[in-house]
Length: 153
Image 1 (cartoon, helix red, strand yellow):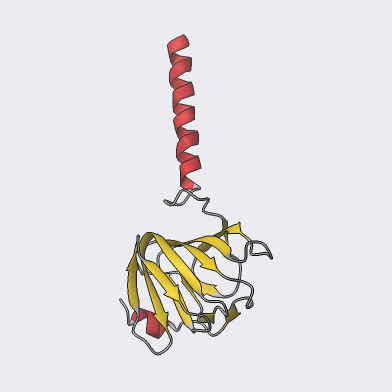
Image 2: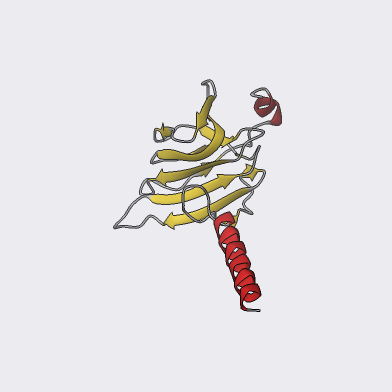
């Protein structure tokens, strides 16, 4: 009887650990909440790690994208740095060719540059975003067209 209870306890523990890990992105940070904002296509989870304030300016967030998810075109008045932590994604600045990015890449987007980023069609994608906030919040523009996105496949 004791052996059965021990086996059941170990199985329950393993299940709890597995479920706990499923809620955390590969980076070790929480996956966050599924976004309900209207500035993207597909499933994107967001975890605010630091909200910018007068002492620590940058907003720091973990974003995790389902395959094919993408943000609309947008501008960060203070610029942005993306530290890619998982998968394969796309990054494009207006008027420039798209860049394919992978885990370990660092993207530096200069202040005021129109751009978008998202997951490749068959890959999840995640990053830690460092966004200075003192110059203003993100300015959202039009969605990335399916025609333009599909051309990248």
